[in-house]
Image 1: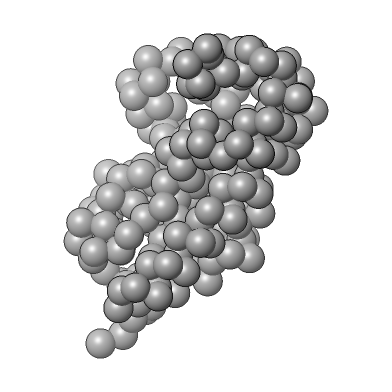
Image 2: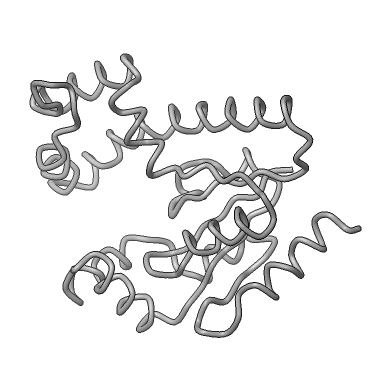
Length: 197
């Protein structure tokens, strides 16, 4: 069984993913981290990004040129869509290979994937259940400002480009509310629903 963990900026989806891993031994595929790896290691992805952005997409030693990529991404919504059309399918394929290999080589009943844009990136059909993590907007903004040293305006703009909690909830099998109330009992109830003893 595969759980997809998603939520907006500052909702605490990474915290929930860590708890699932530490409390229930559920391996979690981190889409952000793996996307950065794939963008460096996958020769086809690199070639296509260079064709799209230019050779300055990568530094001379082969690392991602994050400022150049960010500049291209934020220049227009169309640019972001073009990059996503290259990166998202590669990440999804990598995740599916990872999940199949884990399920083949272990006796684990549940694996998970974490992504802020799980639904938008087309992962809905690669998971059995979606777990949406929610928190009030003011709390999410405060968390993201502290974590990323971003301004209120910067975080609000990022939030405005993401799905709303209501939109995510329409896809979700489960919702975890991370507003200061204990998260562990909520996760325990979900795990009991998914893997009854």
